[in-house]
Length: 73
Ligand code: SF4
Image 1 (tube, rainbow, N blue to C red):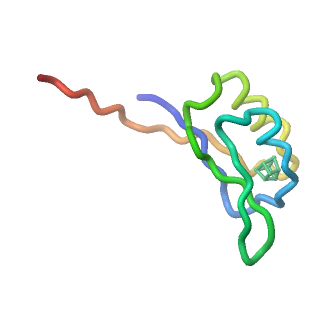
Image 2: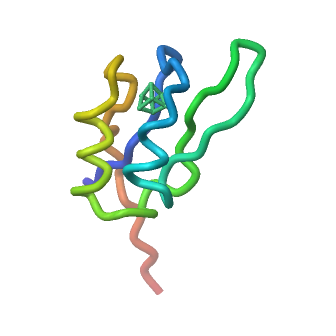
Image 3: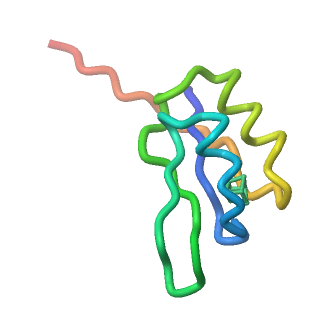
């Protein structure tokens, strides 16, 4: 099992997480204003992503467990 970050709908678009983990999060325009999204779940090391999770003022970033697919040849 591995884990990747995701941003939920409560994001208020404060632009902090792209500053903390710029290769993982990116702001984009929605009808409700700016929101953050994950562009590359492995873009930054887990420590930087965890820092973004911890610093988010509305706790909109979470870890999600995923199953890693192993390609056997
Ligand atoms: S830190 Fe939280 S509220 Fe701010 S842009 Fe990132 S996900 Fe949204």
